[in-house]
Image 1 (cartoon, rainbow, N blue to C red):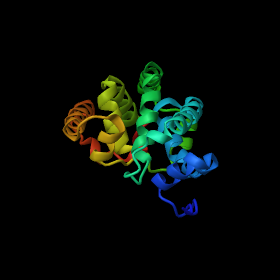
Image 2 (image 1 turned 90 degrees about the vertical axis):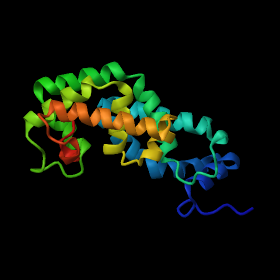
Image 3 (image 1 turned 180 degrees about the vertical axis):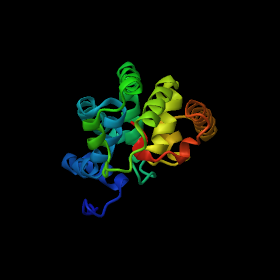
Image 4 (image 1 turned 30 degrees about the vertical axis):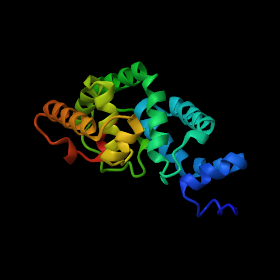
Length: 198
């Protein structure tokens, strides 16, 4: 069997190719590491994100022979691994969100977190209220909300990533949005621009 070129192969093909040519796994890293890093940095800060990304891909490499090759997009699988690693830092995440709630997000961190962190950011007060509301969510509700808002995963992809039914994703998202809405004085959290989230 001739292996497909890395730049054209889907994720499953790269993973399968890496069974015989471990260096092929680098293609998966090249495709997804920046997105996983951005997500982890928003959750934990840049320093911890570096470790989460490294550990995510190390764990994925070790588990690559168990990957379901019928799934051509490995993003949900990678986000699931990252979510488990982020969960180990949940105290740090909640501490960071509470600090943002008191003082507002660190402008340096915000600059690294958004592609266009210019005048489009919502007011500091909204960001602080939102950070406090995010800190108050359960880790499961926060994972679902942020995977949909920041990782741009579908309900099905979030369910795959977290190993939960789609119905659970929907109920957690509904509960998280209701709590965020209440914390923002009735504003719909889906109307708050992504850049306004810490």
